[in-house]
Length: 186
Image (tube, rainbow, N blue to C red; front, side, top):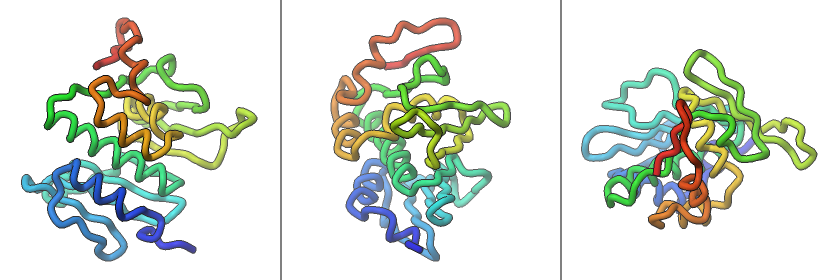
């Protein structure tokens, strides 16, 4: 079985750390730890098949993870995207977020609300059947936005974070007309 550390590309983790503002990210005791100068941090822990990501924890205060992924690469995509949002905010690019709404979700995903505010996202295979790739989110809104980047290549994620419009992944979010509870934010 592959270790958690071996499942991640160190260069992409370095990009995520830089975007997050991390100082000296490192693997310790099977966990990837990245803290910024304000003592907020990212922790990736677990094992392939059940990878937990804690994002924006403060001074090591972990409650429940922001996401639990069956695929380590999905955890890496989540970390890159969330760190990229911090980078965009730092440079005043604007936000690339969509709120929870199954109607805004991209095809190829099934969103199941759970635990009141959370959701589970299941990816479909080529025939439209649920696959073994699942991501459980603490906040349901993150499940909708994840449909934009979880099936994307890493280069597409890197490119989207650096462009004002969010192209190639998020350019069409700005075209969605918000309604009552569905609010597409630039």
